[in-house]
Length: 297
Length: 267
Image 1: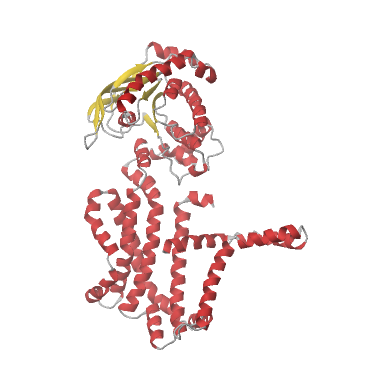
Image 2 (image 1 turned 180 degrees about the horizontal axis):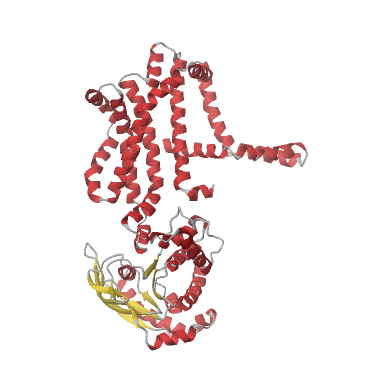
């Protein structure tokens, strides 16, 4: 779900820079002097079918629907979009939200950092070595299919209610998909590319570093995006289930005092943050590892 | 010059690649090759031809050192093959280009693995990119090239490492017919110019007869050498004339008759 969301969104983001420049020079002459009868409809069609326009329209429809549903109202506990935004900026201004993010980001950053590095290392090792795969893969396959949120009470029991158990929650949510994607990515390196490396007498290390890892990068990064999204779920779960801190605290506290606009604002902010984070990750991938994708754009 | 070098080789062609009693049984019991002994004369283009699935590619990969023979040995330049070596370069059926690397880096990759300095290997690569007719595409990525152009990149990469023996595994099979013909003509030019030994695998009889000095016919699996044909075709003639040459047509027919029995058995 996260990948399908993030990739079109990213393209919208990456096109945002050149795009305003493109319709602007067309808009001037087309609408004013030259062949207005012929150009105006084509400009309209151009605008309507423009990816950026359609993406903005999609957001506007959701926001509009939200605003409408809040005004009906479908539930007294459902604020309108504008109320939510008002609460969001209020909390941003008085420092509540930045402080909450700072608290939430600590276990998230530590957990994701550990999951990404340990997870990719584990997955790549298992992809390169059958023995390591047989030893390690069952654990992660179980971990991926099990409802790991059920382990949170055990983690709390073992590590207390502090930072450690929240970091652990992020890790158990994020790591399995990262490990398994890295494993599969490495395992599916095109055989002829590896043969090519051997043919030209590449050492094992060269073949792994120059062929296997770049070939595996797209799938590893798909795993990282999924894993990081799962890590966001993990940190919020931890803050809701272990002890309310950070964003989780804002959500639970405002729910209990019926300040629904603030509660929704907190949820909204963490969703936006998560989406932005995963987009940045995808851009990082394209910049660092996929020069041919960059060239195609 | 072409005729001269050809006659010089014809008189005393040294066997640069010697295959001695090679058999290959894959794990699981599939017997791909059965006691194959073959010599590949230096400076010539020898084709391994046979019905599909007959183990031509297996033999080529054993010569390349990519897979070990079950029994028997391969010697290149007098040394027994235990793995890939600098005197052999491989051209892959599916091109085996790195999609994330430019044409320049792909072509220079063999030298990159050998630790040749960047400026030096890129200079060599640029020269061979020119030789295969891809000048101006140095910065392109493989997905921006046609199948034929991609195989030219694969060929240039094999040429940069300056190996004595070029192993080509059905290099033109993933390329359309028109491009294929042009490729075959270019290959003849390359053989004449580079004075390397080529071992070429194909399932196309016409292609084999058109490009080869020597054709080794392999039988169905488990493969044996069933026949060796040396098409005596004037190489320096016009490509169109070669394709209409009676010797060319007769050789194609002869090989077809030789291979037909395997097809009949197979059906």
